[in-house]
Length: 231
Image 1: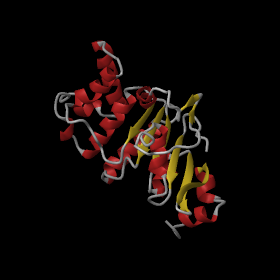
Image 2: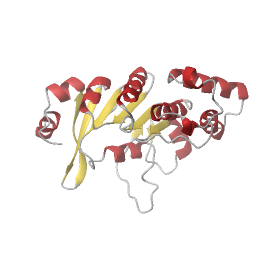
Image 3: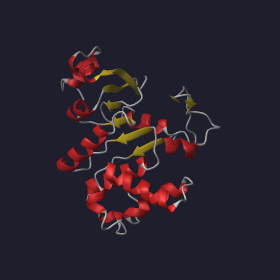
Image 4: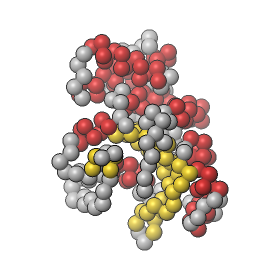
């Protein structure tokens, strides 16, 4: 399966079919588990991801990940963004200030939090926490952003805000998003990939543009899933 630069790809399918496992492979969150065995190839441009010689820390700066439940650090809003920048070697105070303000503005958070940047990030609402986590990832200027059901723990209003933000990232970043919400996939994605468990193994069943997969599906499982007959 190929993912085009600057597009939003939605990964859909029933629970347990390998969607999150695929995301975890893209920034090496799974193969470092003891006794895990990996076969095959993953390329991001010319970079071979499944290569024991690559710098995993540098890879995760290039490939950011946002999880299902917001996970801000138990620090201030400011420190949540400052820490990863310093960990990746950015020390200049003016540069850090600029990146943090720009990241918060891009996520529509600056006006909401600019007067309480030293307050705990845990005091933010769920939707604000998730946007902060996205801002934290984007502060490192990744090429790829992985989103694992980023709206599932949010209320409808917060979900709409996060959806709009994901759409605004189109062309600037390559985005892979796991979602069980087919309506959401239709709204925000350029392309869709359906996964399913067959013979006990999660497999890619079909992928294509949103119009192709939802309006002209080729595989019987895709037909059943998008029509609600299975899933």
